[in-house]
Length: 241
Image 1: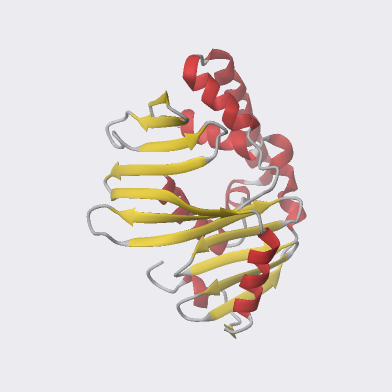
Image 2 (image 1 turned 180 degrees about the horizontal axis):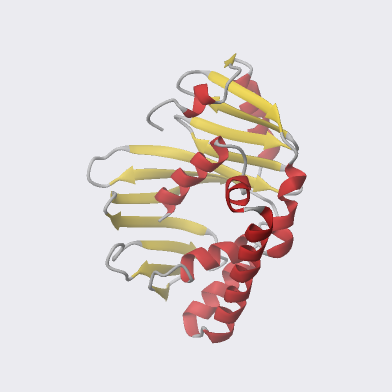
């Protein structure tokens, strides 16, 4: 389901920052209670799961990039041949986030300075946002725990297999039957296939680099060749993404 999640994430950051949409819509206290409930359910699940599934989940939960990487992935529609590439990283030590579609809108920020660029319209929007407001989430539930909740406790049956030097997680529910995610033995994502009402999509890892600062600086330099706009809506209402 990586394709769908990537599209949702772009929509979330365009509307104002990672995690804020959810927190603002249901109230901070309710939001934090929901996070605590998720964490408790993940811990309960870990006490019950066994076999290869437990091995994979524990590997994923313990997985940390010692050197955070900039990842480029390619999404292809199997039926139409349409394809596009995404770029993404989160470096907590350098306080850098990058997320977006290379032929569309890319969001990036360092510290509290954030920017959106539209590589089609060649325009950009920038502002300042206090990201310390988001720090509460990470102290309640880790990002990996949150993803395990979404993958295994959101109502969709799955099967985990260890095939050679990879883990394969296959969706068994009627809506997504046959869809899968593949990870290496260290918990790094490699490939996904989605088959549902939105079509058949395949996502693959294209490249991975630890040069986070270099990529960030390249995006800054690209921004400087674009035209600044005063309204983020001029970017987020660009039509097809």
